Every structure is written in C-alpha cells, then in structure tokens.
Image (cartoon, rainbow, N blue to C red; front, side):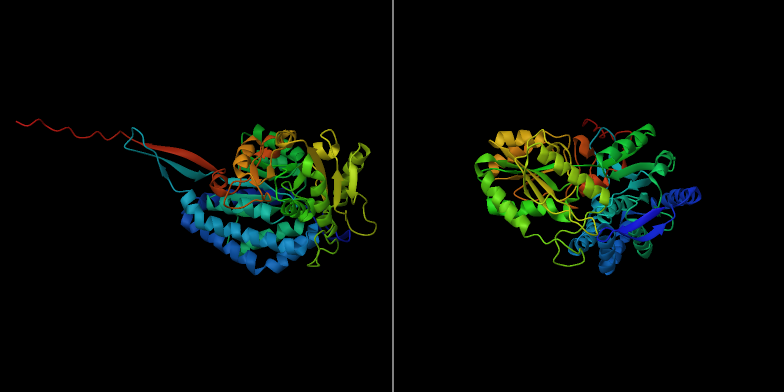
Length: 465
C-alpha cells in the first residue's frame, strides 16, 4: 500500500493501491507508440506543450503548493516558489529549445556535414520527495521538447503530488500515452529499466539508490543521468562580508528544512574570523520561526518522514559525542509531527559524522580552517561533489580558488541554486550527467553526425588560348 502522510501531524491522509503489472504494461506500450509520433513533430510544435504546462502550473499554483506542503511539509511560501520555478523552466525551454536543438553545420571534406539532435525515446524518471514538482519538471520540459516520452516513478511518500503531475500534463494537452505516472513499489523498477521500450533513465535521489539504478541501467546499456547526494561546503574567508555571508548561509542551510542535496551543509570558516561568523550565524538561526508549514511566516516546518528526523538526530548525537560543540538545537521536539529544531554544531572536524556524512535536515556543521588553502582542502575532503559556495572580496583570487574546488558548481558570494539557464549536476558520488541549460536538453538525445558526399570539387578553368 502507498500512503500519503501529513508530516506536520503524522496523520495518514490517503492510501493508494500500487499499480499492477497490467497497468505498467499498458503505460509502456502507450508511451512507446505515442513517442514514435511525437518525435515526428517539429521542435516549434513540441514547445507549445511546454507553454501550456507553464500556464496550467501557474493557474493551479495555490492548489499545487498546498499539496506539496501537506504531503512533504515544505513551508507554503517555498512551495509556491517551487511551482512558479517549474513554470519558469517550461517557459525557458519553450523559448530556447528550438535554438538548442537546431542542426549544427560542421566544416569538413563533405559537400555537407552537420550534427543533428534526435530523441532517444521513452525516459524513466525516478524522482524524490523533497522538491516533488520541480525535480520532475526540471527534467520533463527539455525531455519533451527534444521529442522524448516519459514514465514517472515518484517517491512513494508523495503519491498525490505524482497524481497531480499527471493531471497537469493532461490539462496541458500532452498527447495521450506520451506521459504516465506509475504508483509502484521499488521492487518493480528493475524490470521497467530492463524493458526495451525504455531508452534511458534519470534519477534524483540518494547516492545509495543511485548506485543501484546505475547498475541496473548499466546492465541494460541504457543512458543515465544521476543527481545524487551532496555535502556542499560553504567557505568563508577572512576578508568576506561576514554579515551578508552569515545571512545567506542560514538560508542556504535551512531552506526546505535543510532537505536538499544542494543545501550548504559544511561551513568552512577561516579561523581568524570564525568566532565572529558563528555569532552572526547563530543570531540569524535563532530568529527562524518553527511551526505550521501553512503559516506564511514559518521558516522551519516538519521534516518529511519520522525516520529521516530520527536518523538526523543520531548523526547529531554521534558528532557531539565525538567532541563537537552544540550551539543551538539538537533536541527533537515532543508532540505530533516530524519537527527537528535548527541545529548548529561548532568545532566539527573531518573525522566526525557531520563532516563525513550528508546531513539531510536542519543541521549546520561549522569547521574551522587556518587559511584559504586548508579551506579548499577541507572542502574537497568528501565523497560528494555537487555544489560549493565561496565568500571573499578578492574576486581575482576567488576565480582561481573556484577552479580548485571539486564540484559541479561554485557560487562566489552567493547561494548555490539550480537555474534553467546553466547546467546543474555533480561529480564523484554526487552523480553524473547534467540537467538544465543547453547541456541538460542534450542529455537525452542522439547526437548524430550526418555526412553528405561526395565533396564538391571546384571547377577547373581552361587555360586561355
């Protein structure tokens, strides 16, 4: 049984019977047939679907945002922002996909040669609960524009969000069968990946699940894009604007109740200014409002599941027992709901759990570095490589330091965030492949060379008589 639970109360809202093999087979058959027709449409025709998707998202924003908040606990203002960002992404690719997918002429010895971008087919999208709309539409807008179909296997704690996505696609006029939501248990995923009608797989989720899916897709020799875990460093050097850095650091750590792969998690502070930064940071954290996620003033709602909250608390206890200083929080709230207080751990060292593991919740780890070189070395001392932030007034030095950081993105004097205009993804155990931008739309295409010969030979001129 697939169950939707309100994390603010712990109450079960609704149950869904998982889709059976007959429903799965019907969805795969319909998607393969619909995609064969969809790929024949011009890009300019395909992007009309994206424009319609954006319109439906915006017209239903209040309802869809309320659903996100009720099903996974995101504060309502952030849920509204998530829906609007989905619409922006659809509009962005509606505007840019024709150019991103245009044939590219190549100079060669042929009479004509070019690179063209053909769709791969039907893509299985395995999506997480933490941004239940954004993660799907981030993938879907470029995938549909490129001529692909999609099957969505969403996280089982957000089934109503999954069904709402199906509703949006239908209301936007998506060709029948081109997209389907499947409510299924994880045990069904391997057979779908192996099915010949699935051309590729995209997954956003944990590193552990990513490794399983990668092995399954690799065995079937199918393309994958994996956006996995992260333990992003937020580096503050001695010459930084500390007040601004601290304010942005709090947002970077505690947005979405700290439940994002690209949240800042390890705050690596140059030693000479560490005490001052920690004071500013803790003062900002103390002002965060914890409570009902439907209250527009709430900054910190519940975590999405009880087991996530309990696992996070174990990480805090182990880190404090190893010698870290507990500055704020660290004690679960009593009563209903899966709430955990914004927590600050100071004097964390590289051997401690909060440094070595991803902390997927409202816990910040403060690490002190003697200088910029040690800060970069500490930042890279992790199995992850998703994003990183670097704060300094010396921009010339910052550009050089950014090249030394092992991450898919480095933001200088700002907060790491995904944006349709530039690629997003990681290295190491944070995954591979890219979403968004021109690179994202070309992940699920066949980059095909077309050569036309023979080469044109310039005509010879006869000698004058």
